[in-house]
Length: 139
Image: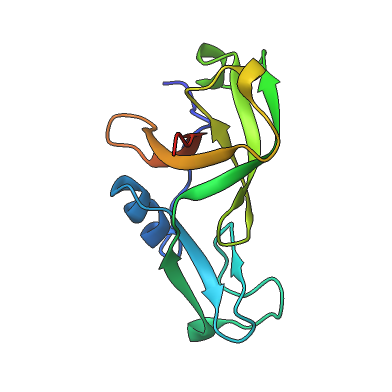
């Protein structure tokens, strides 16, 4: 069996994030002390260092804007090689944090900085994790 490099290693802390993704929801962490949301999920606030119950999960709106992207034409790690070309991207979530992701359902020539995006989810593997990706928002 080939090792897959597109599936996360879940633990007790990140399990709520991946369970929500499987339900079609993106979770963020928000600090009650400074009020800022952050992503990737951490047990402490990366801005003011509050931790424990001061930092809690919340459901994100699923809206974002495109910050930057790169079209990947070669990737030898399984299963990415089967997906090339694909668009690796950084998006600004409506709640504030930036997130590394992939833009789907959009030709590279149509991508623009500031382009409105919305969340979508891709099943990683049968019985595997569901990962958040983004596609153009046709509002």
